[in-house]
Length: 73
Image (cartoon, rainbow, N blue to C red; front, side, top):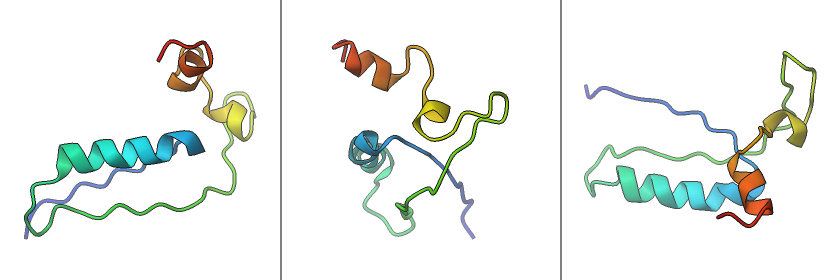
């Protein structure tokens, strides 16, 4: 039995494909057991501290989406 690691990543829609590409590039070894990526929709997200929902709950100051909007990346 090989050790297993599970990553759960919730992303804004525009970051899904770049993230998949990065994982494939970094984690692929061309041997059996490299892993599986599951992509599925998240119905809602709620930030417990503030009660924010949806996109606002996933947004942080200076996150990648904010930097992209400002033309920094």
